[in-house]
Length: 86
Length: 398
Image (cartoon, rainbow over all chains, first blue to last red; front, side, top):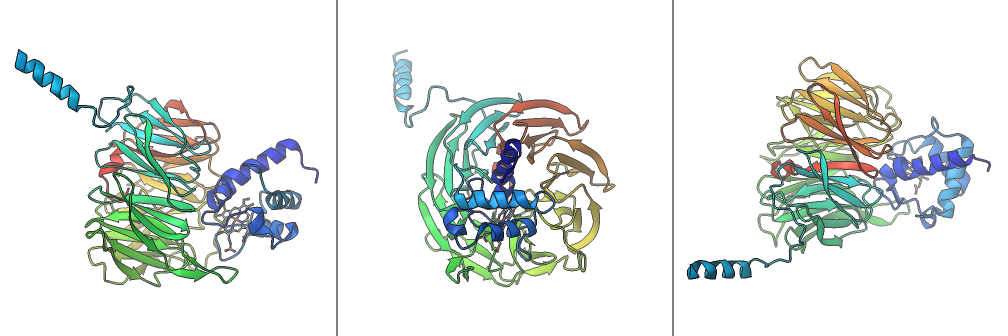
């Protein structure tokens, strides 16, 4: 996945702070579920990337399509599945 | 002379009942407050008269989405952390008096009318725990209604919008199960709970009017809000503003709005719409929509200046670099401020001449004059989020 290092840093910042407003800054859960690898093991990265891009209608999970490319969403999903260093 | 010396000696012998750090302040706390530093798990104790920092207190855990209430003497802040941490901070000494992890994941809390109880609402496991405000001993553990999660496992509903109400009561909403509960703690060893079911789909936050009478839950899953009259807690909750936005497409919400800090100006309430870039104006009494004001983006906090003349609004991602000020007489936006990315929270000084605004990405708190709407001062802070002044100690619902 070639994503420029500065964009990677932006994505991680987005994840911690803006996804973090619902999923917790440490991604241990809040109004939205925890996004830790154990909890995400039922899905592959493609499926998670789709959830990120299109949201889950009827729940507070919004679509991030306007802010992320397919590649970036997939990269985030893969990072979530691998587990982020705190 | 001898007698005087004797009195002085015995008085000084009596003083150190509690170990007091040498650097504790001797002053009133009425012009003090705290600023949460969400990423560092720390907070700053501030002086609002001098725009200065007094202490930095560290070791409070995960403070993303942290909130705080104050003891009635304005000396202790009780800080509710995301990680289920409940921390009692002495703001005159700048230290932690007691800290416990009371659940896996929590969202906020309230202090009882008489100041003796601290209630915490939890996400994981859902429910409400109530502690003594002195030693933080557990007084009551109230589990939430169970619902089935995705895997079909039973788990407690998340509890949100926990507030205090007159009569040593607390009110709370249950997210998944769509309920509002009134918890009566007059008898601390035997809480009495009135449960209102079917109040609406997915209540995400709630507030109580400053007089403690009406409890309003914002609904995520449907249009409108649910209203409970705490003077008549047995009367079923009713829905208001159901007509609002009917048939219109909802916009995605990138940060949930907060109802805390009920913006009440005269007999009008100003509320953030959900999924619409609007502030709603509702007349108290009839609880009908009076007007809506188009604003910059999805509002998060809609807060009235204490005199009710202005309402200040901040916004969700990706527009969280802006604040708008609404005149409550003309309903017009009188100012749009570009405060900077990550403008997360604001707090008015007790009588409203200044407002403190936390700007996460520039690591600072900005202090504005609410009359000239000019920036007066910047105070450095590490990824600041919530700002809480001691004047909250004497306000129902805060």
